[in-house]
Length: 160
Image 1: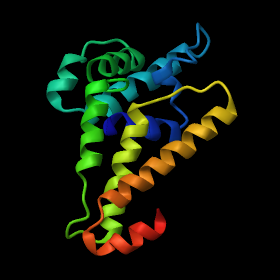
Image 2: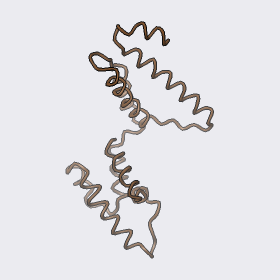
Image 3: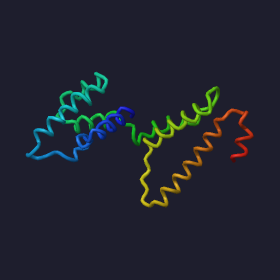
Image 4: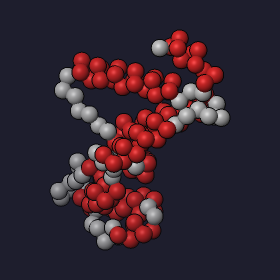
């Protein structure tokens, strides 16, 4: 979800990501100041960045974290196999056609980044994650080559 990435990046840049994660919520001393900032996030950064129909559905929630969790439950596609499938179909159907090589490569790169965002694989050992990354990278080279126009057949054969 691009909106989610935008909001998290913006708040992290402001040093306020803890309001979404609720890692730091003072008990007594400093609570009023923290709470004021949290309401600022709710009103000007979260609600204002949402479609009005969506913001209306979370208007009466009491903190940024509660809003964030509600929106995440409702709209997140992380671990959504049907969404991963849709992205994979887009990757497989992406062809160079009349696009420049740069446009074609950028389109695939964007799809792969989105796929990586939604398809998270937790690895226990560094060697395993390196092996998996190398496997994925090689698959992506094949996907790129498969979408090239016939005039690149010689280049494809040389690369393979």
